[in-house]
Length: 114
Length: 113
Image (cartoon, rainbow over all chains, first blue to last red; front, side, top):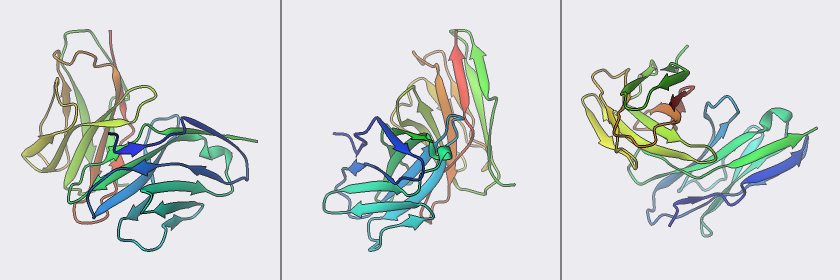
């Protein structure tokens, strides 16, 4: 079974609208961390936001927020007020237990139109 | 500026040749990682290292080798045993005792002809 599932291969959103990118995960560990990265067409991976499994509040970083629903094992990324520069691939990733390695999903391509 | 450098950005090799991809970081991170990315796919872990002179295989280590002689450097060799080496290779580093977000280099696009 896949540890990280991103079911939306592509998403379209108009500039200034909000968009939600879905991510579900599978782990039996009690301690884990969830990450979102952005990959523009240049190829670099940019860290956006982190949510720890024990964090009671949803993580927020500027226009990015993480809708963490532990019981449903989902960690959706919400981008508010989309900008043209948000067009990129977005990857959800998980770190389990005491390991430092990340497992990545297959990504969602987001296109923001004027 | 602190960061991770990978060189070169683009690399072309003939089939059957070994090739080494460079990765250097000046973030003083203990851990370093190599990932492979194929078109339309996520990142897959090749090798990682949490301390100098020690490294572990990731999910797709066959056909690759690494070394970690210095904390700052983690070169990846793509050997002739790797059956399909054409891909985008990303190096990353992280601290071990914090949230552990990984910081990535700009990547090397390897094409084997």
